[in-house]
Image (tube, helix red, strand yellow):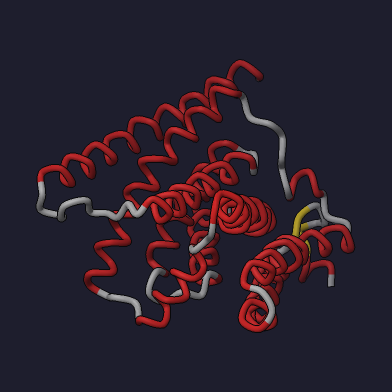
Length: 266
């Protein structure tokens, strides 16, 4: 049993990781029932806190895994936080353009668009902050505890960093259960897994995840849509090109900042 579920005990084994992911996937059914029949926001919060973050955390306590290794939450340096926060903005912008391009080729059904509109809608300033909490902050924290913490940390201990990034990104995309956006969640998953692999603390992907969701939600609230004028328009081409350059430059700067901090600490 121990061989099946743990790597010597400090971290979960591969079998347990996939079992937990399967359980989380199965429990989406009752969570969706709560969203549809009781409360959309309440169902999301229940799903994120109780199922997505709660299940792996309870298992970690019950089996006795090393929670500090499994959920590393040491505070990063301010410079690292600044680099990764700046990096998240052009990355989110590029994902918006990728979403627009994807929707022009594979438009999601009307029913899905109506659900998305209902999810994003709010009334007044209090409604905005409530939806910001429900759609940006809570998922940003809870999903990173499962995917980058429980899954990626454990997979990396067994199969190495590169395989951990790839597998975790795929799990992240699949569990979002959206066939029209699965490739977009995969791109976001790669990004979040990479920043975690570099930064070694969950606060980094949590920050990026919250910024990405906040960017999407705020743009929707303001009525901003991409492309602004069209993919062939010079304005949008300049924005896309600038965002790509910024992602590369800020990504290199972020990685160098982390390496310099590690070098000074050793």
